[in-house]
Length: 239
Image (tube, rainbow, N blue to C red; front, side, top):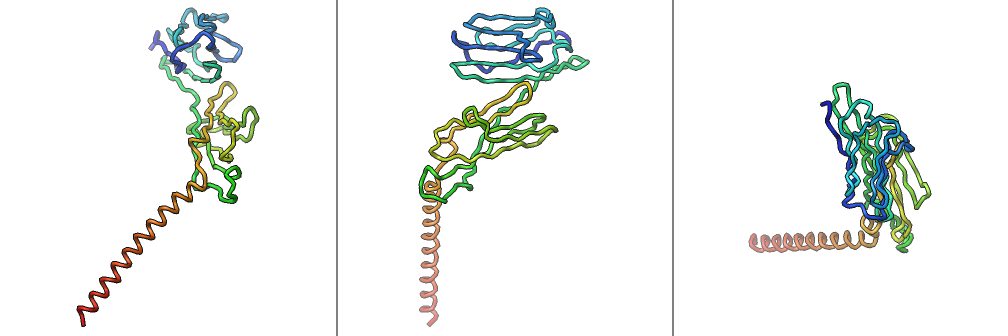
C-alpha cells in the first residue's frame, strides 16, 4: 500500500570502526548511503527519495519509507567487515498498485561428489576431489569458479533456469583459495570453498568401503555355515 516501507538487511551483527557499508541504487556510482568509521551518511543527489531513506547504524540495514514506483530498481550493498568484502543485491519492484516485492541473487551452494574420488595414484597430493557449484531459479547471470583472483571456468544463462551448475576438481592437499561466484552486470554473490569439510581421500573411502565389504562377507559366511550345519543335521535325522 502507499506509504509502506521496505528494509534491506545486511546480515551484519554489528558494524565496527574499521568496517565499511556502502549502498547504491541503480548504477554502482549512485551512492545513497554509507557507514564509514562508524559515521553514517545518507545521499540523495537526484532527489529521488525525498527523505525516505533510513539506515540502521548498528547493522547498516537500509530502509526505504513511503515507497513509490520510482523507488523500483536494484539496490546493491557492498560490505567490508573485518577486512572481508561481500556483496548483496536487492531487486525492489513497486507495481502500479504499490505492492512491493524484493528479490536478490541467491548464494551459490558448493557440494562434493564422493563417487568421483580419484584412485589413479597412491599419492594423496595427486588425488582429486570432485565438486560442483550450483544455484536455482536464476536468469541473466554468470556462474564462475575462481582460484584466488584468477577465473578458472564459467557458465552463463539468459532465460530462467531451474538449475545452473559448474563442476570443479581440486587436489586434497591444495592450499589455494577457491570461490564460486554468481553475478549479473550489477552485483554478485560469493561462496568460498572449504576443502577440508567437503573432501575426503580415496584411501578413507576405500577403508570405509573395505570394512563394510568385510563385514558383509563375514555375515554371508556365517549364514552359509548355519545352512550347511542345518543340512547335515537334516540328513542325519532322515537316515
